[in-house]
Length: 100
Picture 1 (tube, rainbow, N blue to C red):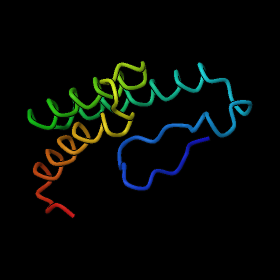
Picture 2 (picture 1 turned 90 degrees about the horizontal axis):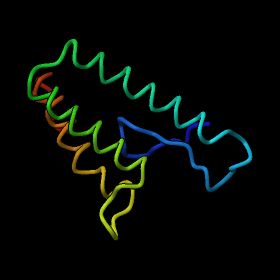
Picture 3 (picture 1 turned 45 degrees about the vertical axis):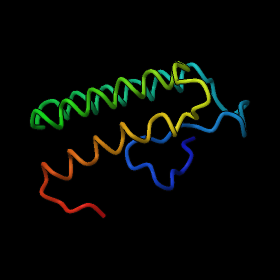
């Protein structure tokens, strides 16, 4: 069960606080981690250098956040926001798309 994300285009995570009895947390995290790495590998095949670098940064940040390695006082999304924005900016640049 994936929670709908309102402003994050790249990553959505389950909301375990609402219904922890509905899924096996470890299995779900492993599934999401596998999806993330498959997406990352696809990106590496087609992306330019700048987008690949931002993809690596964002993937590392997601991995850190999922493992609880965020700065004190920062929320999960507050920590990921700058990484996600740099990744999306690089993608827009590579695709020639103006920011929305």
